[in-house]
Amino acid sequence: MRKSRRLQWVSVSGLLLSLLSLGSTARAADKYGDEAEGTRNYDDFERSRACASCHKDFYQQYQQAMMSQAYTHHWDEIEYFELAVPHADRNPKLAGIKAACNGCHSPMAFLAGDTPPPRVDKKSRANESVTCDVCHTIKGKGPDGTPFNFSYISSPGKTKYGPRAGLESPHHNTKKLDFIRTPEFCGTCHNEKSPYGIWVKSTQIEYAEGPYPKMGLRCHDCHMPKATGRISSMSKEDLPMHQHIFFGAHVMSKIRGAIEMRMHPDRQDVEPGETVKIKLYLFNAKAGHKIPTGSVEDRQLWVHLEATDSKGQVYHLPVDKKGFPDEETTIASNELAWFDLGEAMGKKDFKGLPRDGIPEGDRIFRMAYYNPKNQITIMQWYTARLGTDYRIGPLETKVETYTFKVPSRAPIGKMTVKANLYYRLLVKPVGEFLKVPEEELADRLMNEVSTTFEVIDD
Image 1: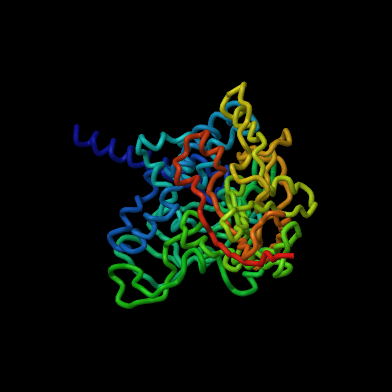
Image 2: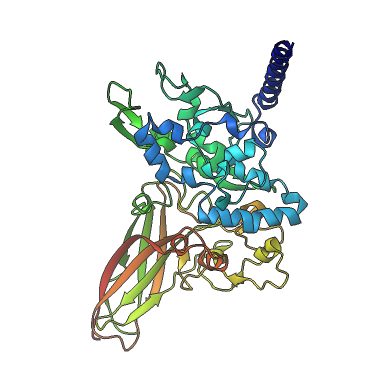
């Protein structure tokens, strides 16, 4: 009798599990974006370390990339828990961002409906960030045209999607998916609209509108460069394959030299008290999108010019104004700004922070983000409009001029003018206020160039 009841229970429980599984599959079928929230479980996805036994090189490459740190990276954790979550609690229009941030930063947490996920120190599966299984079980995107806001369709299971057909594995099924080879695959997370309908990330869109598609170059060709190797430990031959390096703004070897520079004076001989005009050219020779791109509200790209006379005296050269709309946001200033940080954090007496933390008068290549109160903001989810786009596009050259009146007491001899192009991952005053580690705020020398002219005796 007991045996019969036990068999009966196993059958019933098995049926219930099957029905629950079918229900889960039905809920998740081809859903994408906000509709996919809570349609999966963490256990639907394998851990990336499971891939390491066969794909050793890919796994080690991935471990060093921001893909594996999209949730645990210090600035991302601070931005999410110190700004986004409390802001969403205070402003009903922003309520959805608590889940939406994780649609790309921790897709498993989003798909599992784990909102907000535990803090990083709790070491939950949310910490796994963008895993191997997350990307290789995406089977397509929503049908709404331009991909954005995690519009991928997740289909976890034994079938793993990749760019090749005919591969066999003892651990999983493999299936060729053309979509994984397209820039649109990247665009599902590297394009983003704010709750106000503003494109606050548009890297894939910038690429699509630029010259690189006509040249046959894709995101993968620069961020996952090809090299010959073995796909897995069981492979019998070397093949050309895209490496899983995913290097970008956090890797100095990637950004160094991405902007080429050249500079010259309008004449070679200048008397003390006279004026010389320096012309500087900045050419985006390397990136298939604008620089900076992605988290444009965070990034700072600026050029600093100094002239040094024959006795070592240094003079700072501010950029000449061009007079285009919103130009004031592209010329460094330390007036107070970022007032809405207080709103997000519930600090009613917040007075703002210095805007740039850059020598005043330097040219900044940026596109300012503005909140609904028309204040410059660093919170992409609170962006209601964009300022003038003064970033450097693919294969675009920006030309800046600097009018320098040589001091009347400048010594005779060679005057050297040097331009340093710097890059920061985060606006320094904001990072310091939020106690972001110093490495995120470092001035990274992206390139440099110099020229000379002679100060002569009249």
